[in-house]
Length: 601
Ligand code: ISL
Ligand code: CA
Image 1 (tube, helix red, strand yellow):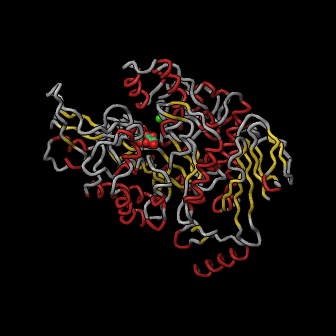
Image 2: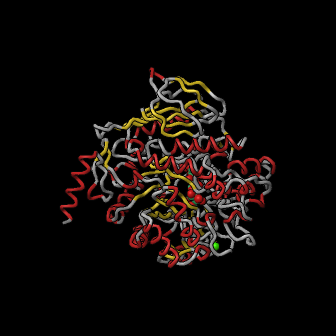
Image 3: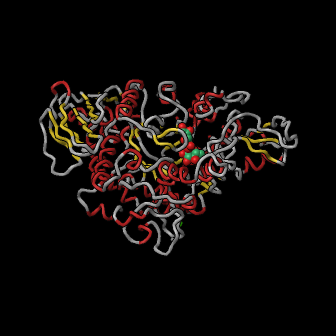
């Protein structure tokens, strides 16, 4: 019976030219030279659980809150949900410091709540990936607690312990073993009185790095991965995964690389070997997806991380695009549109049919997408530019990632004082820069308000009731709600036919309707044009019904009459972010402020 059904499906798919008839790996087909898989076709939505929805009025988002909102996500059209860490944690870095990898953070609920959430996600035919944070743990994890006890503790080698260097000026206080800086200010080494040695923490003092050169560490990590996969999660987003292999002997970082240590930290000699081992022992046994946060990695140098034949990761996040707007410490960079195009053109050039990419311009570590890349100078421009950016994210080659609130065009928070912030990155940087007199408080606050990570962590704006429907009106949210919730919120956008929310739904539906947006070829039509980004996504197969899509983005508030290169004509209009647009079948387009259109030609 099974065989007959399968043959029937195969025959039908030949007839109707839909080769992607199945999602399981055993029955994959090839489209335009790409092996088709569910995670290539998926739209991913990132949830920061602390800020998504509070179900019990304690001011902290939780798993039951996520479960309450699954119909909202289903209606949006997303396929995969990625949740930032949900594990037991003392929250020095909001869960990126894990105390127990097999326990749910008490503020977020219980394991029963997790199981209910996962079942509800699956019941809606969506999938869940969880955050795997295993470059480091919390200092309250029992591995580190043991490791710190004595130099001969069996867990000593789970972390990096080193003697200090002699300090002639103050012999009682040795200097750190090397010059590694921490991403959260100061040295990456912390002196520990118990055993009179330093331990390594590339992030906060409470985030000791795990020693992946110790096979026991790798086995323990693989076991906890299996624990979650066996529960039914569909894969992992892997936090700073290239940092797991350290340079032998932990040598100093060359002086000229100190300003960007991530590049140095990501280049350890065993990185690929450990990932391949992880793949062999764990990932290859499941139908899962993996996306590595590839801090310090550029595709030019390291395309092998995502090369299917190497069996490491499915996809990585590289930071070339999302960091285009900044330089130095939270500093604004005067970026130009051709630079952004060049990044995506370059990805297209480098990656082969064996590789896969991600497309994203936001997450929980970056400013709000529209405040960072769009135009929030007026409400009209905010709405248009947000729609334009989402159009781009959903039509470039790679799996698109949408961060919670992007679909509403939520914006940066009007931070005024240090007390408005919660993030350890900001708090530590203040000590390092302002307390020492390097930077004025005003300068610091202006920079942190523009780029601080808390911008994206303010609560989701569900409606216009006090606290935006994130929590009860009486509760005190863990981070203040953006005051613009009275107009920017999901309920209001649900009522408004021209809202960003409705548009993103349409754009996601279009992404699913046209396989060319997943597997099609990409061509940038006008790489050097300073204002318009236009490109095609084309799929020659199935031959009787080829898909040829044209995306045109006026990345500016200035209207423009734009003539398509090479005598090309825009064909049939499929989607436009300005209502009333009818222009079609023409070679010259009159594009309004931040206008985005998708044609089939
Ligand atoms: O190296 C960087 C950029 O190239 C850093 O921005 C780095 O990628 C980033 O700080 C790492 O972020 C991740 O790990 C941190 C955590 O605070 C972040 O929230 C997480 O996304 C430590 O776990
Ligand atoms: Ca709660």
